[in-house]
Image 1 (tube, helix red, strand yellow):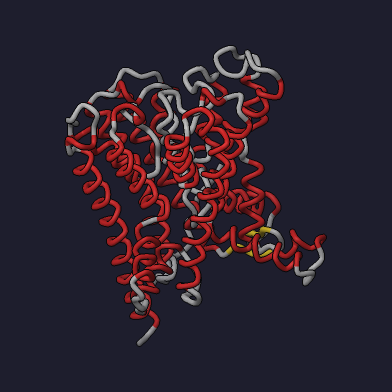
Image 2: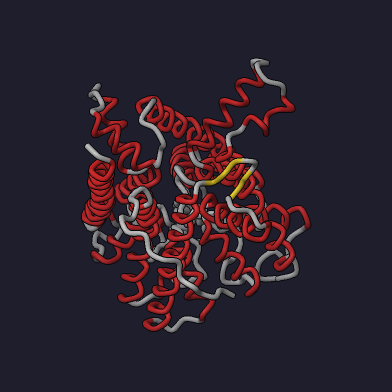
Length: 460
């Protein structure tokens, strides 16, 4: 079998995986929508299909935008369905399917291993079963830790039964970067002065958004330090390039300083808080923008500069192989390193003394351009069909496409067309990056059979 045939075979395999992921998410959304239309799912005993479809989509796509108040509209059954959809969407169809296979003691076929490799963008099929086990185990541990921390805030306020339920729901929602809560109508605004709730939420959001690959690299390095196999001063050097870039971008795109500067005197957001609370809520706002969707301050009250910066942070989103959305920090970082290479006159794109392959640079460019084009298209459609200001419309679409879930009090007032637009945005935001990475990843290996002459064009 020659190279072309191998590439074609790999392309067909990846496209089959892509189709399974696309259809898997769609099936989960439709199943959730049907369950949420049942009389037992709503307090009133009835729910229109569009509301159920919107809620199922925002849950599976771990977005957090809602058209009805989750805490009062849905019954316990409805909330359990929503929570299950959030967990399913956060970990992904492939990961949970693989976990079920492990529980049933079923062996992973070569096709199953290839599907896991494609879905998570891994470079090798070695250790697939171990990888899935670590993902599930790590998820359970972090979510349980978050739930335990929440107990100290919620049990004194709501009692034991409700306190445990709210803690579990919020922990899963925060880790999966869903941003859906069942405490009240104002997200976490009533806890704007609670370091316990906001910092616990931040911890869960960051863990989910960093990505599983970064988790294991950090854990492995720290384990070697604790075992005295490597000195503490070598921690940063021992991280792989992927982890270094992710951690660097997480710090650069925090947005805390910008939020604090533009909102510290704004009475609609941070203006009436003490200095300590201003810093706490500015930090939480910067974290939740990374596709989490919880709000401790009014998003409607944000100043225009903060809205613009927020849209940029939301568009970039979290990190690969995690629960966050957006084009991903690695994509943005790759483009930044590519620009620096041009400015410095380098022939290769270099990060931390490692060369980033040209195929990765091209893929990052393609994902960014397509993502931005999608954002512009749906922003225009939403603004054309709903009476919204430019900042409100762009913020809403960015939040949906990046699966963030923050809103400037726009979502419930959207008309039918507007809700359908946001549903499509949320779905594309959840499956789009997966599809594009897999598609362009394979296309990059297919060499052109014809070499054309260089074009004489002028740039800049």
